[in-house]
Image 1 (cartoon, helix red, strand yellow):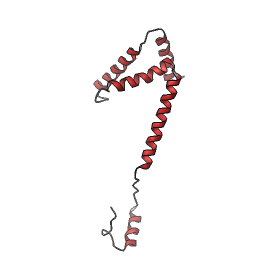
Image 2 (cartoon, rainbow, N blue to C red; image 1 turned 180 degrees about the horizontal axis):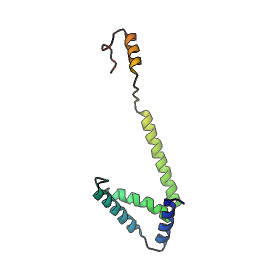
Image 3 (cartoon, helix red, strand yellow; image 1 turned 60 degrees about the horizontal axis):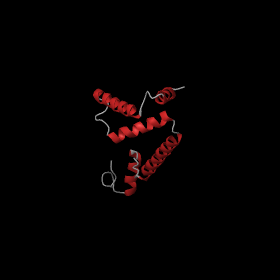
Image 4 (cartoon, helix red, strand yellow; image 1 turned 90 degrees about the vertical axis):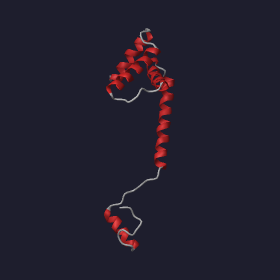
Amino acid sequence: ENLKTKFNILARAMYRKGLITDDDVIDSIREEHRILMDLGVIQEMPADDVIRTVAEGILQWIKGDVEAIKKAMDDYEKKLQELAKQQQAKPKIDVASPAVLQQLDKLSSQGKGKSKLIY
């Protein structure tokens, strides 16, 4: 068992017994970010909507909401695929070795420094 599994099991048991509430999770996320900010690890507190999104993700696991977890995983996968497509669509810059640049200069018969190549 890894640490995440142990956390999920204990948090789920505490949640079912009413020892942890949704508000407790939200408050704990705020406190964690406040501590990180005080330590200088982060520069600013995340917005409330970001905190709520993080809390929703944690609560989905605590509550064992399989459908919500599957949907979140699918959404995440779609975002990754979209980002990959955007990366592929960006123009690619290739860097040639000095030897290749010299060959291109010779082929252009303009000599070094007179071509449009960037060194």
